[in-house]
Image 1 (cartoon, rainbow, N blue to C red):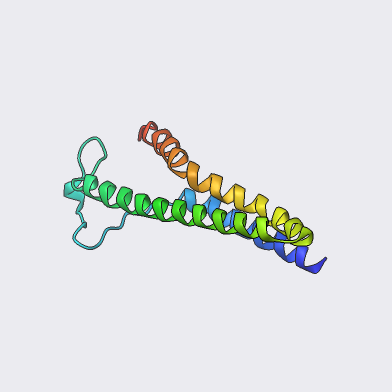
Image 2: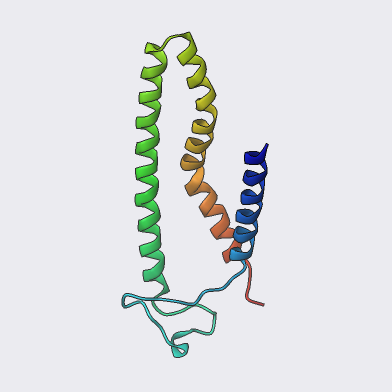
Length: 127
């Protein structure tokens, strides 16, 4: 009972932090990617922003590749354990399979989801 209450409070706090962090604008750059107000173009973009996009996309690509490889390896290990396990162990593996499947689906769909979000926010004009 107490653990469920703590879990609900923690989840609510994390959700509120996530929602607030979406609306915060951060203008920071480092590692040779800094810019001054004179670098801002009339259309709202910044000189060198393509370089930042390239670095970000390569990092996301690496993380996605690692996530996909790990999820496939874990699926193989769980499959082997499921085949070799007793009836009780099979029941436990079935219980742990749903969170794994949801996580793997999120990893595989992350690039499509990120592209949709990126297209949505780039379509919004600065006003």
